[in-house]
Amino acid sequence: MENETLTVVDNRTGREYSLPIVDGAIRAPDLRQIAGPDGEGLVSFDPAYLNTASCRSAITYIDGDAGILRYRGYPIEQVAEQAGFLETAYLILEGELPTEDELQRWTDDVRRHTYVHTNIEEFMAGFRYDAHPMGMLLGAVGALSTFYPDAKHISDPENRYLQRVRLIAKLPTIAAFIFRHNRGLPYVLPRNDLGYIGNYVNMTFEIGGRHEPNPVLQRALEILFILHADHEQNCSTSAVRGVGSSHVDPFSAVSAGIAALYGPLHGGANEAVLNMLDVIGDVKNVPAFVEAVKDGSAGTRLMGFGHRVYKSYDPRATLIKQVADSVFAETGVDPKLKIALELERIALEDDYFVSRKLYPNVDFYSGLIYKAMGYPADYFTVLFALGRLPGWIAQWEEMLNDPEQKIARPRQLYTGSAERPYVPLDRR
Ligand code: SDX
Image (cartoon, rainbow, N blue to C red; front, top):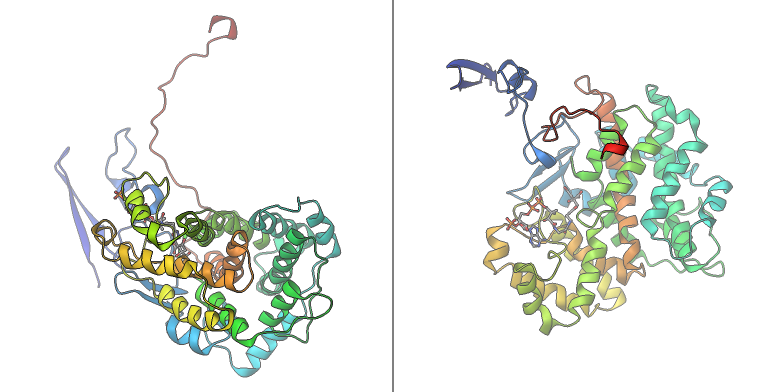
């Protein structure tokens, strides 16, 4: 809407200010024209960015109240049902669904880069056998930046494409190596005759040169990767954008995203949900646990519930519940599913959760599926990272190509001491 403005009256001076409203936002720097406490202009204050847009983005659209999620305009329900993961990655990265030739080229490019330097194997041997998988992923991806010094040429689109291919191709290999390292099993090298998901599953589970693929479980894993592929300015994506804004290489920027995803309030929640279900132990303990969460005595939140944006059911959780049915038909139903379903039933009726608009999010059921597939709880967030990788890379490139962006450097409200003279040690 042309010439929409917000008129502000400063009752300290009586002066009026007209702040332009563009795309439903006012620009925080426009506040600087209004005098602040120390003679400088006003700043906006928004810890954790509850109501601050950090960028313009064309990648993912979320309507938190309506429970809508779209990748480049395509509804997540249709993409998850009809697309493959590399096809979805292409859509998120390029902005359009690929033609058959484009998808074939993209798939071939990825297929040719699935190996990692053998030094990575030696690097990973340095981790304890029981090192947390996300700590290993964080270290290994950061280390990749030292194997590809050319990745620093971030202004070169062709170089960025090569690094994008390397990341998408090599993370499953590293993730599989991590799984094998934790079990003291020899690494299984990539097989380029297998598809993206099939190759990853084979590198993870092959024993004695054999692994009978289960197409139902592989498609379920692919759908889970698709559902995690991007989610606008979440914590880990904001970390990738922030670190990437210093113009560091993409491997280092992605390792920042992995670090953020590791946290239990973010990607680590899928692991925390399984641990929570273990603590509850039985359906009969659910009411007491819910009460303990509400009165704060549980020392934890209802993990897998709540979301900063979704104030209704996370559309991904709905789709994941459908995937769960197909997986459990193959693997048998996890007894913990009953606990999860009872937690959901009670929470959706309890005013504590309803009043705070706390619904199951993407992490509530995904862990049960991963566990049924044979992954341990501390590995679930690695699977989240494999899914989220295209989104991190696309958001990183969008940030680099955005003329409004520069190095991320927020302001602060200083609450420390006024000036005071140094006191020598012998007088303290
Ligand atoms: C992901 O941003 C994204 O898009 C993330 C993600 C993605 O795809 O990238 O969707 C993936 O990270 C999903 C979220 C996974 N995390 C969890 O499941 C952990 C449990 N959930 C939360 O801790 C919490 O809901 C957050 C972190 C997800 C959102 O937190 P907010 O928006 O900062 O909300 P808040 O902490 O201010 O909570 C508001 C109120 C508080 O109560 P009061 O202080 O008002 O009394 O709701 C309560 C909170 O205590 N609350 C919960 C709760 N989540 C919020 N109480 C119990 N259990 C919970 N899960």
